[in-house]
Image 1 (spheres, rainbow, N blue to C red):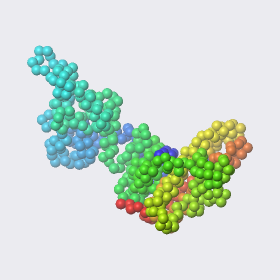
Image 2: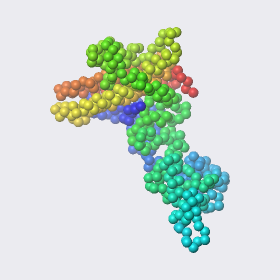
Image 3: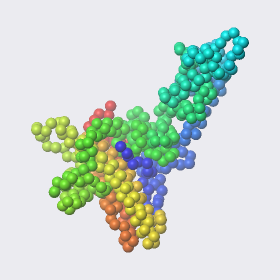
Length: 506
């Protein structure tokens, strides 16, 4: 499921609609700086480009090679054998270089610097002939010999090496000879495969490097090549923080669990449980419940078409809340009906499983609703862009000033992402005053979000656009502040160990 989280943290707006840098707020994660150093409330991290990551790998290889006195290609093999722990490798190599080389599969009787060279076709007058033991071809045009001196025709080597890289995703594999422990080095790979396959080989080496270090993680967004180095986000730290980071390509993700989304305020342990339950309950009946309603007055089936939760039945013109199904005229977001789960009265006729299912559906419905509303708000904004162009041409609004609606949608999107995960968090919170305070803050933000979402549906006319713009700017700033309060309070609660969960952490 999508999370609408690629946008940077919320910007603020002054009275005339100009942007203020979001870094001015202590509660926001700052944008990527030129030096790559990052700070958030609890963690520090650095974004590394693919080029910089390759430089780090090369630096480790050259450092080890210069100390142990072997070629860089052999040093790379030894580092992979030691899971890129260069200090441990150097220590063991100094104790017994022969033992290290033997354990890593390096041939003992052949110089490590031996360059693999293809041999030419055997002369016709040569009494012996070469037979490739793989394909049984006699005197092939080219023969390739690895450091271990095992030789096969170059065609067999090429197919073997390409299959290991492209099909099996390996960059650390042995000689083709049965029982041989010698690993194929980088210069040999470069000679045996085409440019595209060799590029894939280099990517696999980087992957092995990153996987060896807990403080490194690739950005999970598709086609992104950035890597993030983070000082936190591991072990027990994940019970007291949500290590949300931003890569150099401005993608936000969780460093702890690798989810390509900002899932604050919910900690990683419960995110995995929540998503597992969501996948198990993702059948047709759940989609119908999450995306359709029956009008409480005329029983007409209604599918949601906009981000706002105020629904107008076209059949009987009755207005009601999409979430709690109550009459919109008497509806409020700070009551226990709409945004807060109320524990049911004891009912012997209702089993515990049914009660648990009702609770799950209550929170999942609201989780899914905010994801759906974020998408619909964006679609509504896109449909009004042409109208905004016309209004801009007939009014005194500048191009920047006319972007107020898109700015509001960006803020709504970020808030709805936080709100949907706040419902997931509320599902795991134990009943009590602390949960009630959390849900009060949640309800305040949700009411502000719905008010702003309703403004998106107001008609855009030349004579009223300035008034609409000012009201939307004011409400956008208010929504942002309520968002900051909820996120700050939930983060402080994690740090202080304030939250009580209905599911054990361990």
